[in-house]
Length: 173
Image (tube, rainbow, N blue to C red; front, side, top):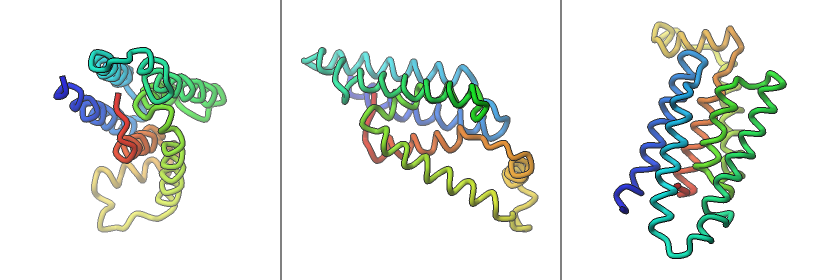
């Protein structure tokens, strides 16, 4: 069962990257990606429950599944509020739920710090003109389109902050 447990964060990371790439390309985060992330978390949580002796502590502690679900619901609520005020897209709001599941309650502060740093770096990067040597690449043209439209694909920043938090925090489902 340990092999299945170790593959959970890698699978989640790949699905998170797919969601970020989709947001970067089309300003859309597929519902399937969000549902896949929730399913991957649920699989990891089930494996964790089968492997521990104290199921109650695993379910209800802040460092266990209860903390993960609490973090997911808190972030999702924040996302819905930001969406209601037209500050976020619906995909970004939905993506907050699995992000909370994977960073957990104790990963919320590092996630917020990495999200802030990513947001500041993105805003600064969008202010810098694209060097002409790179202007013909598809990614550079997309960045220029984002700069002109002033529509930021926040999912990219959110996913990068999540992956860094998962990597440094070591928290998995």
